Length: 156
Image 1 (spheres, helix red, strand yellow):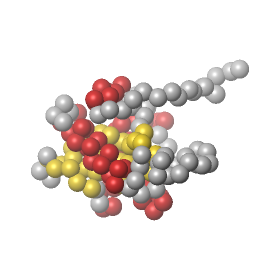
Image 2 (cartoon, helix red, strand yellow):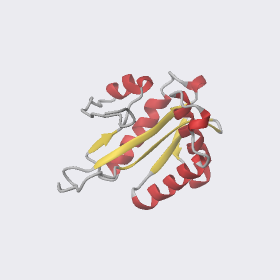
Image 3 (spheres, helix red, strand yellow):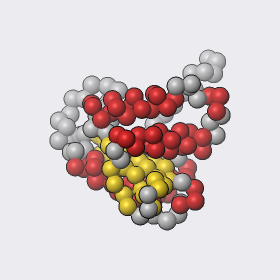
């Protein structure tokens, strides 16, 4: 297995893996926007241009069997703390093809993303964990954090 940075020419692989994550959550096909692929491609382009986004692939031979993306986290509020003391990076789209799971691929991909976030000066890595990934992320040293949500589609 080789882990390496994905090239722009390989964005279709990153997009395919990202959409597979949503399918694995049970998202029905008719819930995807008709331009879902174009949206992810645009996000990758924007991320590279403004948020130091990088994607990595896990390769077995010439087959891309997994991927991960990482970037500077765009804060939803004004940042007032010196970036040397607080600069968040975000890890997203951790995906390994089902036939290749439980072989260390996700851990190797995560380490590539963590190393990249360190390289660009991040002080903290953030991610949203799926049930499937929770155990790995805890093993890598991630801690549970407090986030609260309110479903606004439900009545008052």
